[in-house]
Image 1: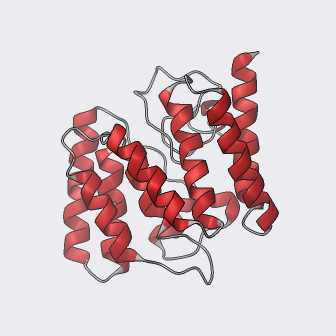
Image 2 (image 1 turned 90 degrees about the vertical axis):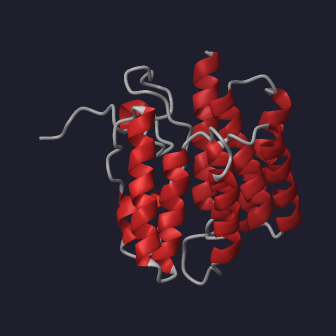
Image 3 (image 1 turned 180 degrees about the vertical axis):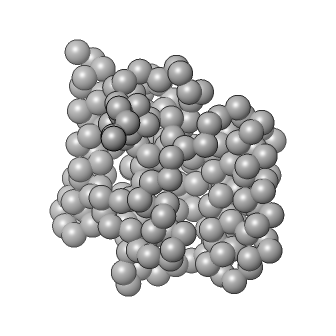
Length: 219
């Protein structure tokens, strides 16, 4: 029952995120929901807490409260500097996808480099991948290639399988804006084979495992 409640809460938060792309009231609702969840479940596991922390900070950023979002990420990362998705989430605030959205690549790159320099940072391959994408967007193909090489090395060291290419990744590589439904919910990865069907997919899509990489192959 408890697991079903947590799954439902995460599904609702993602729905509010998607709806908030077009409705400011849903952005506020997402902020309030994330804050309430963190207040009620302070001892929940790191993966779920991380997702709701990101939802809270991202919502502050999206509602024009950038300073509060920065302060939250700063405090969480001082507490756990190896939280890779924290560095990524913070940087993503400055590179939102969508038409007419300003991109602050220098600020995002600064944040990612800070995280990438942390000894033993988790999800290093994804940080390197984000840095490579920024280099591509800012006309630095040689740096991008080197970062993608480092990302592959980090992925192999971690013993993780290469996740399936998703629609949002394809559109990002092609330089196309993502739709709300394509927006990734990156989540902490776990070794393949240890993920329950109702747990978040280890590829980082934010979907449940049974609806993503754990779904039956389509003929």
